[in-house]
Image (tube, rainbow, N blue to C red; front, side, top):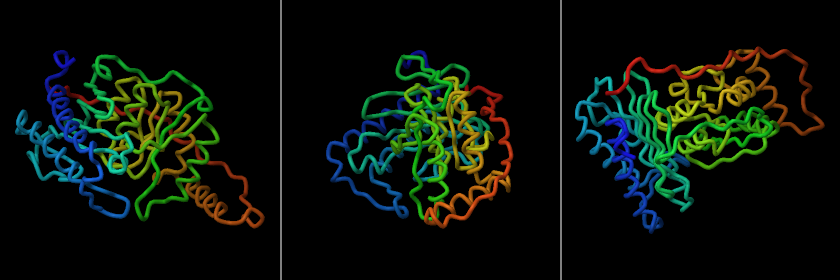
Length: 316
């Protein structure tokens, strides 16, 4: 496999496998792993730090002039002004890992002038490498992958992530979740956004949505999705999802249907949509017999969803 990869992607795969080896060794006795909390329900372990260190060492040994943006150490390492920046989540799904729930991954992406050009998501539990280079397609191991072909949301399996931090708008999310659940065949919450996006790219699930995300959660997965023929954006269909913290992905038809449903729940939605969401949250908090009547209103039509634009350059 590695002989056909872009040189920078080859290095990223090497780094991901090295991190995966650390994670797999620790998983043999996960109860012995030291865990601390960054904030309520947001955990970090010594394994996160060790995996991140080996990734950074591997990448900077090969490309000392590149920048780094990593979940645990931020931009502490690497060049500060490079056009080449590696975006790293050394262990996406830490909560799953510390409970022995086998759904977590290593996520590494290379951005060039802000555009994702190379991506690796490594599932160490199953030893699966999901990879993509801009313009060269997406793969799992040696197999080319494509998004699922379903065109009706009612037939689809959708993945998501639940709010878990203090201050997250849980009631608003539950209303959004309720709408999606009523329109699709099923919803799953596996617990690792990068691997969720890899599953969309591979056609294992038909779509994904989540809010409260960071760039390292979605950078690599976003390229997998687009190189597999899918679309990815924020809830209103804009392409700046990595800066906005909310993400929806799927094949073009399902992506469009999800944006139509979720657009009014975006923090970037229009005033009319936001008012309807506030009313729905208030009504949900009241007993059924006393719920405030909601007048009929016309919601603003979400803007046409569009894909993330391709970068102008190829990492070389």
